[in-house]
Length: 179
Image (cartoon, rainbow, N blue to C red; front, side, top):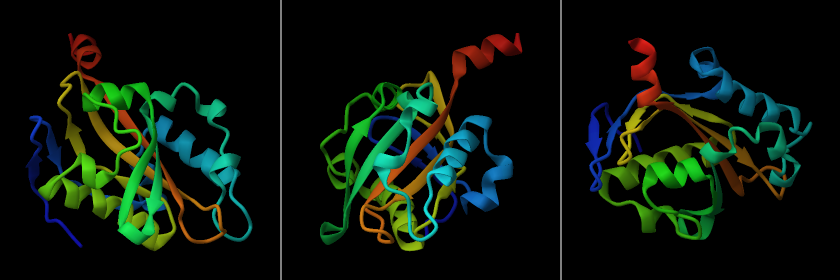
């Protein structure tokens, strides 16, 4: 599935400007230092064969970024994904806590297709994805400039979990810095 470049408007007034979706290796040069830290930690816990296990990922090493992270469980039989954990910044930006709900329960129409495309690409490739779309959420204080998707596996190769890190800019801090 491929969605052409355009801006999607969510039912909550959020704006989603669809940008480049690259393998992490391709897009790392354009990524923030924070996104690079998460990716490098994922690489460090990697195994010689197969994907790392989620339990091996030391969240305490990136505790300052944890508020902007999601943990998503792959529901292969349903072609869906369940939000297992959601950092406080993610909950604040979304205006709700999706924990325990699935992607299909949280999104609809074009937004659903866009979100599923990201997760599906990670599951299919078994590798990280860097989405350089700019998202203006319902909480206008924060703008997501990049989203990192990293696969994990409890069974070796098949993706069973995905860690998602969203890099946000605080629009008030950015405006103050420009004055």
